[in-house]
Image (cartoon, rainbow, N blue to C red; front, side, top):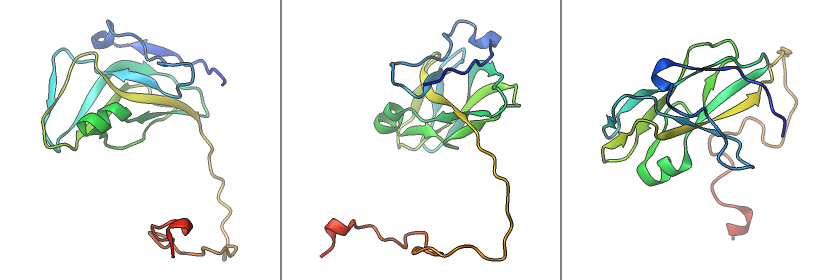
Length: 156
C-alpha cells in the first residue's frame, strides 16, 4: 500500500475528536466520527447531514470516498445515503456524512460515534473518443437484469 500525504484541519467542533484512522493493518477505510455537541435522533426513513469536524486538502488526482460502516448498516439499518459520497480534490469545506435510517426504529447518533468510513482513492478521468459505432460484444446492449438471477450451476 502507498501512503499519500493529505493535509487535514480539525474544526472547532471536532477539536476533541481523534483524526480519522485505520482500525486494522489491512483496512482500506478510516473511520469518520460525528462531531456533534449533543446526540442526534434520526427518525425512521429520515436523513441528516452529520458533521465530522474535519476539512481536508486532497492532492490533485485523488478523491475521498465516504462509505457506510457495515456494522451500522447490518445492525441498525443506518447507511450513507449517497454511497459512496465523493470529496473532490478541490473541496476545502467540512467533510459531512449524509446518513439515512432505513429501519423502522429511531436511531441515536452519539457525539464521537463512528458513523462512516473514508477511503482515499486515485481518480481516472475519461478522455472521450466520440464514434458513430461501438464494437460488438456478446452482451451487446443487454442490461438491467438481462443476464438473469440464477448462476449457471443453479440452472437445470
